[in-house]
Each structure stands twice: as C-alpha cells, then as structure tokens.
Length: 125
Image 1 (spheres, rainbow, N blue to C red):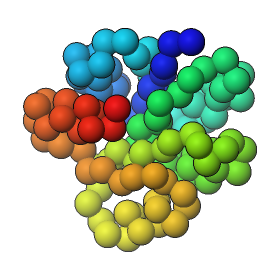
Image 2: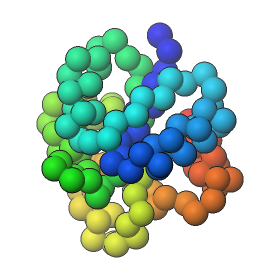
Image 3: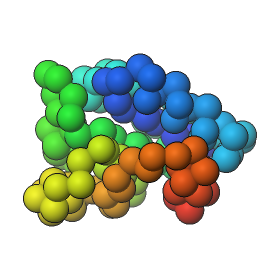
Image 4: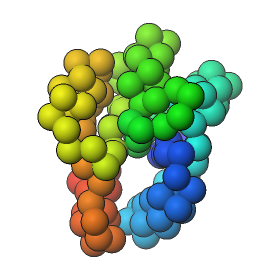
C-alpha cells in the first residue's frame, strides 16, 4: 500500500507549492490535495481503510469549516494514530495552544522559502 500525505488548504497556490515540494522531498508518497475541511473529511470517510496516511497537513484559516473544526471531527472519528499537523501562516500562540489541545500532533508555521519547506517535510517523514 502506497503511503499518502493529505494536504488541506483553501489557497490553490499553496496546495500546488506543497504538492511540488513534497514530491521533491519524498517521491514515493502519494499526495492528495483538498481545498476544504469538508472535502478531506469526505475523502477520509470513503478511503481511510484503504490508505496508509503518513500525515495530514491542515491549514487553520479556511472558509466554511476551519482547521479547528476539521481537527475536532478527525479526532472524534478516527484513531489518534492519524497524524495531524497544523500547517498555517498563523504564529499566534493561542492558535498553537488550541490546536494542540484539540489533538494536533504538531503546529508548524509555514516557512517562507522552499528549502525550509523541504526540510520540514523531510523531518516529518
């Protein structure tokens, strides 16, 4: 079973950058892109038993269902073995605290450059 990384971000440019950089850092992983919390939750309900998910990179600031709400639903529905990493532009300490309290495995502020991004992904793998 091929290992998968799920990326959830409402910004299509961020999604494409993430996909490209993750593929560069780890070409053996399948990358799945989602533009909303609702989309990733629907995907998980259909596919979680057929996937080997390494981790989910989850943005916080999204319309309709934000990252906090999505994280809560993931933790309510799936094992804590499913690694969820908040990957956001927010450096607010309250966002970090709330994310970890809701069950995020890590909280990472998005880096500004591609080499930092690749290094973060390599460390997560």
